[in-house]
Length: 108
Length: 108
DNA sequence: GAAGCATGTAAGTTCAGGCTGACACATGGA
DNA sequence: TCCATGTGTCAGCCTGAACTTACATGCTTC
Image 1 (cartoon, each protein chain N blue to C red):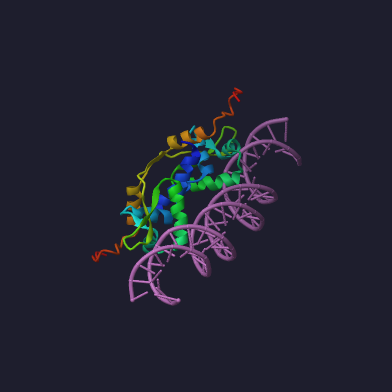
Image 2 (cartoon, each protein chain N blue to C red):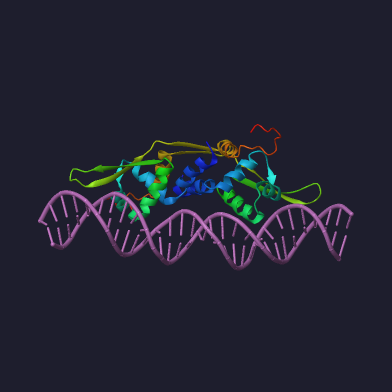
């Protein structure tokens, strides 16, 4: 895992609102408008956060038709298990910068 | 663990530069100026990041006197092991908001 | 057709965090 | 004394993220 990939997830999860979003849909899938009402935030804003969470692979959304024929966008948690230690981070950063500067080998 | 505490750590670790800082001192303790040179960033900036990491409990610094009598501020990793799952988050957020709105119990 | 509720998106604004440059101060050595 | 190197802090700029308002669109139901 590169540091960039790790960073996307960490940055995604490192925000109060997004933590609330995760906590909310941890209780079950929900469509956007409903979720926005529950969390007391505007839909456009929620959209942004959901987008970010989705890009990080933490949630996944799917557009579905309700009985009444209305289109509802449901979001649910994607199972994730992030283990963060100094080693994890060091490894990720190392993977990100392949060229060991201190080394004289010019394996370019 | 409240969501705030969790957030401090996650936000601290959710930044490229700070990941690099952690990765760097994962290889051993180092004083600020040296660290700044290695990472190629200004000391004031590094200070800010170190402060944030320290507040999150990820690193710890100590001012020491070198042989030459110069004061050096050494930073080293604080052992940490962060496990992030939907449950972790949900629990933290729940701990943050003690009043269960949907519940009628007034166990305040 | 108007009202209600849903998805999307495109403005625009505000604000915190990231970052730079310059400073004060201390010490050791030429 | 002057220079190099270290700590520590402050003022200020600037970018990007967060957030709001407003709109277009589609579907039902009255």
